[in-house]
Image (tube, rainbow, N blue to C red; front, side):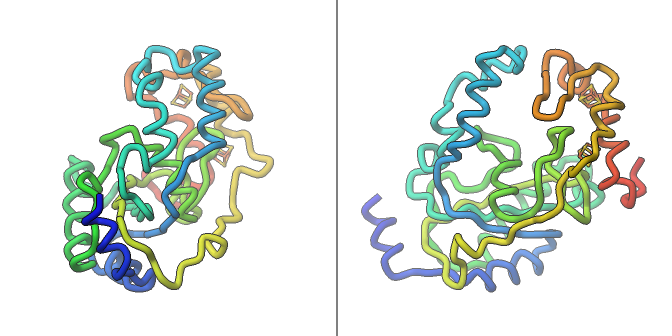
Length: 230
Ligand code: SF4
Ligand code: SF4
């Protein structure tokens, strides 16, 4: 840790440079958020788990502090860079595609302090969708999917956690996505298992949770209509 801290003292990244590198590597969008504890999500998830709505996902009962506070999972974390890639560009193995691009992004950023474990794509107790929201990339819809205002929910996410500070990026100036579900409840009304509510997703009822084969609540979402994927 001492070595990392020494680097942090004199090494700072420019947010504009990060955005430019992410574009050059090929990501569709990139955002950033300061590493910290996700208090609201911790409260929400603890209540959700206490009600048993997580079904057999008992792994959610473990590593909770690491999940809620990325600094517990990644010692030395200062900022979380979140990237996004449309399904169409991910090929058959989105983990491999996104991780490969994240390693390219890391190389483009130069010799910066990086925690030992710093690249994630659906691979660790990281609340990815919430980090994407914190990074100003979109919102979480009533279908519980992360939704980008232009690309809808047909995107995969990845994270690069860095151990240095970022210039020209004040947390108070983080981009704020105004779009959201508003009055819409189409996915709730079309859910074939009544698994969705205004503020709830019951994993025990959800067919996708059982079989990974239901996409109804994504197909009907207006944010996905322009994608011509369904
Ligand atoms: S995936 Fe299917 S069952 Fe699950 S919430 Fe969406 S529509 Fe309902
Ligand atoms: S269908 Fe409507 S309520 Fe459901 S996620 Fe999309 S915008 Fe939100």
